Length: 138
Image 1 (tube, rainbow, N blue to C red):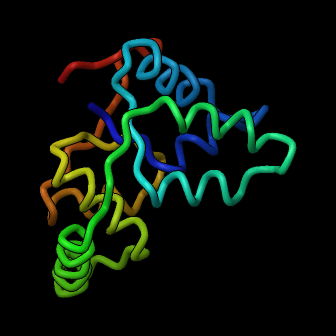
Image 2 (cartoon, rainbow, N blue to C red):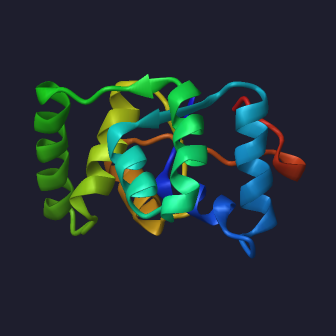
């Protein structure tokens, strides 16, 4: 499974969004490998235009969802501290998303450079679509 970050949802929903990101997301959706978590849903739907919110919420309703309980928040706090001690400064919500993905053993599909910075410290698995956006198993 691949946790799709807010940056991908936003890029894919733009009219002039990068085609490779749109194809990559579509590839995940086609094979039912895309997943969602609360922080991504909040960021994405919170920034959506009111006339688009119902359509976007429909996508959110059918995707597998990773919950974040107190244990996840505490691990995220530990990860946030670890990252800062290593000189990596990332927004707390990105650290929370990374922690959720790591605990769920998911890869992360993102356009956000913070995840690339966090990956070696937190041992994150980042997702790269295969040729023409197809699902990449590895």
